[in-house]
Length: 534
Image 1 (cartoon, rainbow, N blue to C red):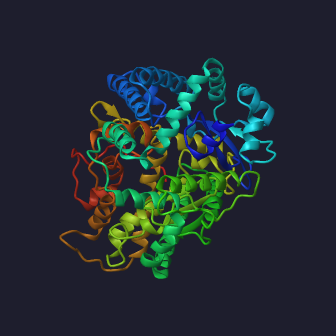
Image 2 (spheres, rainbow, N blue to C red):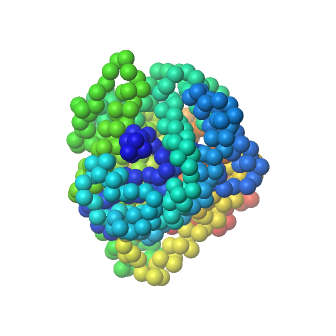
Image 3 (tube, helix red, strand yellow):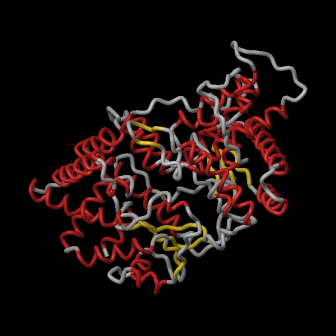
């Protein structure tokens, strides 16, 4: 059963297996069997027929060959093995769903063990579950049944040598950044330079900090919070969050396109959202992880196994609603529809994003916009399909649902016109939720800021009016300069639009921006048919 232990300790082998909340009963955690088994970042890399995609596939085969040579294989044998690995991954990719298809939470396939076994008879699930120490499991969410049928085809059709080489490749692919320079350099040459256009490897200290955050993030987070995040900052963030929630409640109540029944359901969900600010109430215990000063790769492996087992051990148990999916130093935030909570790590509540020394205008524009963004996620094209408890449930009237979809289509159509790089445009059905949340979030932040500063005399600063400073404050979080290779990859894998359009795409929909900057009809930042949902 060597492949089972490899599967636990290294990601990406044949399929994905983990735990998550039951879509129909969010109070409990069940096993999830997902598609996987790919070395490239997304199934589209294997299926797209444009010249750039064809070229990248050939470069990927060459990379796999070179990695196998570093392992000791002869060049001719490594080439044959790489081609066969590519063929296996391509078959799995073609049976996988697109990222857009995976956005639909109604496509649920909760099955028992017998059904799961029937999907892939060549794989002994009972042994896998036993070796993974999962105990008796009777319920599985198989997100992509057609993938598991193709997995069975591959297991039946592949030789033992094919399977061994596939496992060898994915083992070295997963471990490469933590091995000797030959592995590190070859891995970076393809996944860093070729795929993302990064000219050189980050200094070792940066990679080490990122790794500690990724693998022991709450231990690092305790130290980060003690140095950077005071109780006063937490209280200010909570106050702003409450103000923006009040703005959303007021906005829902006055919506002209939504009926009273759906409005009441929306308000119930809004008032049920939990606000998590800064860091978890209970820190994760890493005492069982053995860290050795002279065993870097071993440290990574042990931390990986710890996290894998921690997640698998949740299966069959009540959900821990205090758990976070981001570490405290993370400069990001998220909404979880199954938890119905918004989460703002301490890292995103730091200057220059949130600066207590600054006036309210830029702080509400930036951090307020982020808070509003995450709140709006509870009501975007995905989030609106979950009830206040985090279950997939339709709480909309038919007419209100149609009204929402028509307004959301305005956003989809707008972003579909934007060019990411060369001739690649935004996949606006993939970015729909984030684009809706961006727009709704900034509108809510504006409403909250105006309420906060009502009857207050606001002075110009740095040659800008307070209203202008609000919008500039929002735009500053998106100061970025992306390489064309990275933009191309993001267009396939990233559910967010490029930063340029996450700013400019909102401003054309806001009459407040037009007024603040004295825009005139016919100018680029004026849009005749504005989009507005929340």
